[in-house]
Image (cartoon, rainbow, N blue to C red; front, top):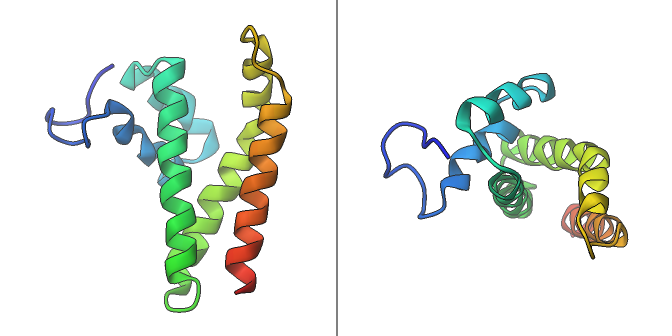
Length: 119
């Protein structure tokens, strides 16, 4: 996979460079970005995981102190969940990977966001 800028951009995982796809790019531009970064399915999935992890922490930390950051986190989470429909079909295509994994992941994320917003 191509690394953005120097080889020192990430945290040891080249997928860290893919976080930008969720934070700054509209949905329609992500496929072009992915192709340019030469990200395979595994790296792309890790990039989504990184973005989701960061967004959940941001939402919890900033929900009462920085509306812009909290709204950005909510937007990233919503984009990831919206994209899960296309991810669901890819997961079903993997041998031994039941579709219920995607449903379970979405339920966990939804519950986490509700818990953060209600506390």
